[in-house]
Length: 130
Image (tube, rainbow, N blue to C red):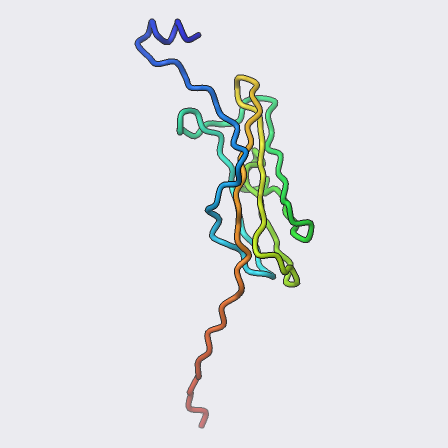
């Protein structure tokens, strides 16, 4: 395959690397709230569909947090809705997703998401009532 690509003047495709260290970057979810997260398979940083027979496998390290795949907006299962219960006292959680690339390699990615306290903004409403 690499020889064919060289013959066409293309550089051989780089092999996919498995990520093992959690990646920071989640914006955060408020206790009692929810967040939506999406995974995308990339081929040299270009989005691509999952190969036939592959699926997304999701996990979250905080047992209090629930999630469900959103097959309505993303039939591939690459989008999840995460619900953080109001009583969760953790400061963050880690989402892990894995799939298989077209070459049969297992790929894993993680994302650290902070659990952010809700912000209270106090003000006064003044209206005429009579």
